[in-house]
Length: 250
Image (cartoon, rainbow, N blue to C red):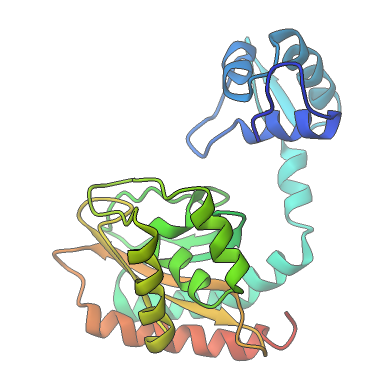
């Protein structure tokens, strides 16, 4: 959320300040937050002080960082907590079966949010992080969810434009739409070096009783080491099992 300078309601400004932190940010100064949010430095300074007082931010030296209170609140989100807890055994089995890093993600707006990641020894350094976001159309989990979402969800993603993360990222709406048709036919989506060069990913949707995606699970690894036929079968099996467990309650 990036309101124009001097504009936006109080909740929008607070959300913009908290959203200014990306997965790689441990500490941000007022000036940098103001730059990222388009808010006046004086506004950021005042609201940051309020957020520190209630534990949503923590002061450290001349900057601030996200507070423990945010983590505590995040753990109370029922749908995501239940989904993560149900998925962990399936994720562990999938990592054991494939030897690759396993992700669990949900769609939020035009991006996927990673709820859990089980890293594999020797795996690549991936652009994903727990609590982090990536453009849905550039990821396996994102495409798996989009393929099994209502049409208006995909329309929202396409209307905003498709960001390019690598030379292989799909940025043409028509090509993405055709690829999603294939995903619907086969029940699995691929990221072929679209989010990071040298990395492949196979992902499958976790579906509710109406066959609408509520999340996705994936396995990611080095393109030189991943056997897609083996990984695809294992990912699809994990997603089907998890859909039976959580889909009815979604």
